[in-house]
Image 1 (tube, one colour):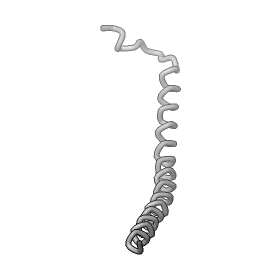
Image 2 (cartoon, helix red, strand yellow):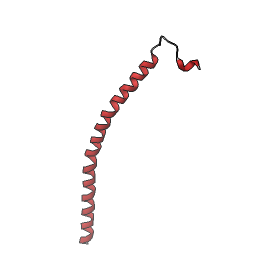
Image 3 (tube, helix red, strand yellow):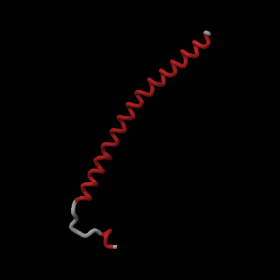
Image 4 (tube, one colour):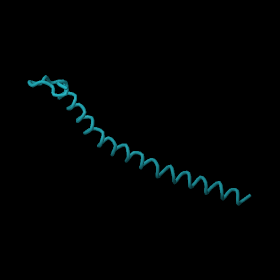
Length: 64
């Protein structure tokens, strides 16, 4: 019976350790991803704005 109790306690300790390691890593990854996503979204928005601006010269892609 004591071996079973030891195994259960060890499993609980491992599960708790994994959870306590996972949570800060997840928070860190979310923070890093937020720092990467914002400049990309700003770049995409600038590209959309540039595409909507009317050009003075004709579009070379349509001349073919």
